[in-house]
Length: 243
Image (tube, rainbow, N blue to C red; front, side, top):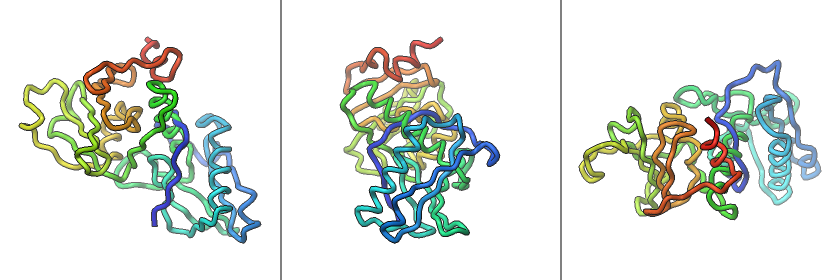
């Protein structure tokens, strides 16, 4: 069963951390509704404090509104499918994919998830402070041309007319072939992101945006056929301003 939490904020694709360095966070208000408390771990330097606090508040609010969770379910936080697991003391622990290889290998942390949500939201709001992210769940497909993931510059385009998966299309920005001449295949967002992590910041941009990207700090964003310039002082502005 797939559950979803959306409408939060994003920061780094994230490295795994050892259990010795993890900080544990526990909800405290689920028990009064007869439900187990949630527990999750993050690396001490991997997320800002308010991100972990937001997740606690969100989980408690869902339980208070009548949501119920069971071991084995999948809970979607932003774009990331988290696994719900029972603990020996009756709590529900959240696990995330290790962000290293296919297929999903779940590990005892949600730090990468909270960072990804924060970073993608910050990217969206770098272009429009009032916009909400349109997350592309990692398990859903995008379309990839045969040479896109080996390209020097990747052209990402989100087109709702596709009505397929996340509506993202990836192709070689320098290809001499038109889109109609290219061959595309579906691939999960997760697999594409593992091969070309520089696409990750832009995956929550809404319909109508295109991005030509060759590195985390090397990108051009279009909205329709007009250049979209990041707001001064924003997350994306900071990336381009940093040598």
